[in-house]
Image (cartoon, rainbow, N blue to C red; front, side, top):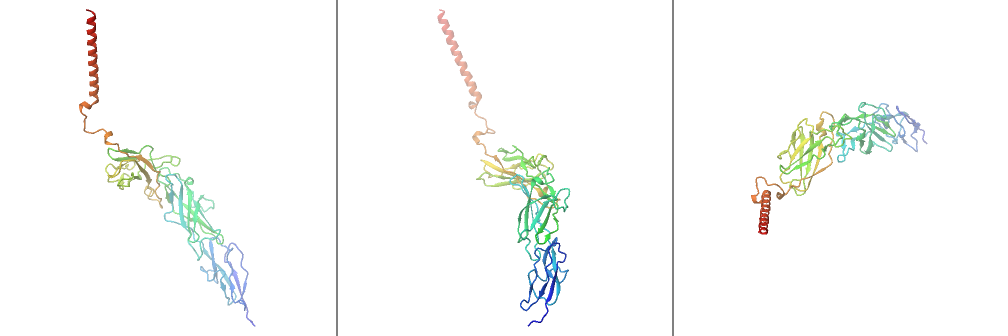
Length: 392
């Protein structure tokens, strides 16, 4: 027969903002030496994650987990242990324009939420809210501030997330083709633990305008073996009304099949040329401050001057405004084709060579005129001779 006295275990939610306090438990009993500690599911504290139970109200790491078997040795109170929810974090690259071949598309943003208290970041119903902040109110914590991004992925095992914002909702118009500064905000909401604090990205550079070749500007000069044109900061007047010539850009040319050189690049930065075309005769870049974006790319030896070459131009968002935090990948124009078929020798005028006089056009004309004159003289003499006979 057991004459022992059971211990009473009470529970304190320790500042919870939602849920009900579990009922007291008594034990141990002869047929049940342990008690199961109650679950904290459905009990929440805004901005915190429920981690477990502890005998100290100030514990930051729990001694006991929800549902754990516990053997009380005396009556006591166990306190819920709350760990602050980790703020969402942002990847180092942060913003990547998704241009889609020269068509303005979306701005991409990505990051992660650290895993805490040994639990997966996400459970069913947990969510993440990512927003593009207004240009004039980048630190707002109003729930509906800014423009909501579309969450494209959120891995509950690793906490990694990705989202997109349409370029059409960007608050600051990119009027010079060199980008603008933007800021994003994120907040994690969990079903059981409430909301994390807002986290703000640093101001980041997002160049969302793809450059383009000026219409009908691409030219092939067989005489000096060059390709030339004008690179503009945008090909979309709907996005950028005040287009200007680029001074920071890279032209990439893919040569016709069969050429010993597959492709050639020309990078221009304020009049300085680099890339594989830089050392080819005839290559030039627009000077610093130029507004026409004019360039000339020398064609390397070994390139077959036959059929079409394919050209694209891309910008340098990291170089354009290097003082801003963050970076973007280059925006690439749609590909343009240019016929670089060389004319055959027989169809070209021969420099330094004069045709013999008997093959010249003037000779044929003079010969024909002389022939007509001779015929006329003969006919006139016959006519005169006939007249004399009739008069006798």
